[in-house]
Length: 550
View (tube, rainbow, N blue to C red):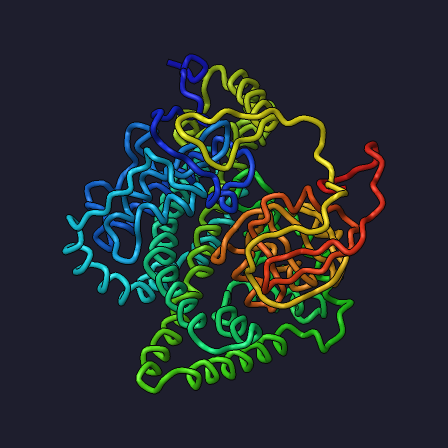
């Protein structure tokens, strides 16, 4: 059977009527409508990775670490081109873990507790969890560092060879990248669920009980390090001052770029123009803004704040507090380490697929090399195939239809998409935007609504307003005065990096990109989660609008 006869849509799946789904915690990983190639890489890796992390702590039997046959039994699925998480599955896991409850998880995802959601806790797996969880948490740091260590060299070796590969070689590279990507997603999920989240929860509980100023709280919680991304900022600073070459920079950070979590995007190693523009911006900054000096200053502030925290506690509680602080310093940076590794693996998949597309276009199997991203990895193993161009046409049309709709943030059963009407405009009657206080401090500035394709527009001191962020955003966060993000929580990428850089940040606003417009003057309070609109920019005529919020 050819693909054209297959009833399966790679970007849409059915659901049982009683399963609850949410896009709340996947917007950062899968913003917007994905391509078939991206989904075929990411979905199995996320499925297996998260299941593996729960199995490591005993909450899930090892035999369930696989991709279920039925879409409705999976913890992640795709609806109208957008990823969503199975809330029922996570409630089931919460029932097995100490300190977690199904009803709390349901409220986190859905904002309420529906009558039909499974909320009964069980002690059936508690003995297994009691044995496995301490060992998993004690070994997670060494495990993550060991498994990610070879990935950067592996990425460099493949990317140097991609342009020389024939069709069989590029397919071999793609399959190798898929295997590495799946493995690194397992590492990322374990690092986050086993290593980072429990320690972060203990750290925030500790600072909430201590007598600290908001600035001290921010120094303790925000100073735990996102080293992969602070290294990126340091190297951009060096590039802007001609202390390293562009080739040196790309050899370290070339896998980053606009929409880097989507396989079809073009990252910096493929198009370095955004890097050069950013380096020019960095070159205009005074030497006093040196990121190394700023990092040293924040490290000193963290040490002082931690001493104040310990001093504020009764003597008997101090050893436990010191232990939590040491765990935070060791484990919280694991989030960035594993994320860099899976992005490197994804970049090899991107490059090998793009090479396949070029070769298939040369053979006139495809009309355009970029059409390769309209197929799944398994489908590409059957290339060249009859009817490929027809399949591309159908899937491109289907994707355009998905782009013309929006989904609710959560639903039961199958979602009802809403057609996107006229471009949404900023609500001139609102006086403020509210979200989650993610990184403390107050900043006033001019709003710039943007995505990762418009980094060149950023000016030092701008208040950046966006739907979501990825690691490439660290490059412009360093230039910004504050950050406001539609989606995310306290451990989202935006929140973690903003705290590390000392940038006031509000996340989870839901509609900041539509409530605010480029040119508005605002005051961002990252301690309270509020964005006060001080003055409105003049509306831009409809025919002249270039981006969201303008």
